[in-house]
Length: 103
Image (tube, rainbow, N blue to C red; front, side):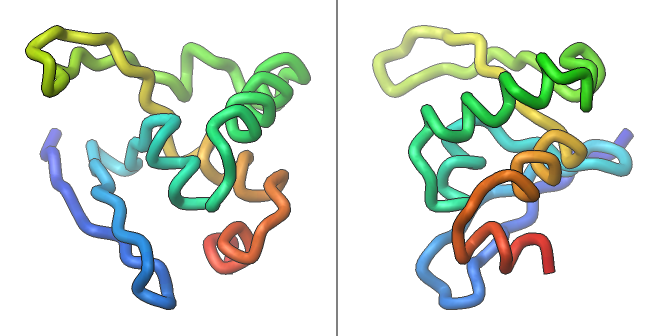
């Protein structure tokens, strides 16, 4: 499986996000999804909780945990969400960026 990183740039050029491709999907963490849709992390987190609680997606099949070393030198476990989860959030979030992403 190849790991690729692409840079997503919003249509207006104001936002860039590193998109991590693995196989046939890509992965973003909560901060990146929040930036993508221009919504607070709490809003994105609530949408993800609703998606999992409703059974729309099975958490274990769309979430991966990866260790990340922060600037303070500590290692943290960060959850990454695949394209299915990102699209589900995109259809729930009410923002101009959400509409652009869906298109």
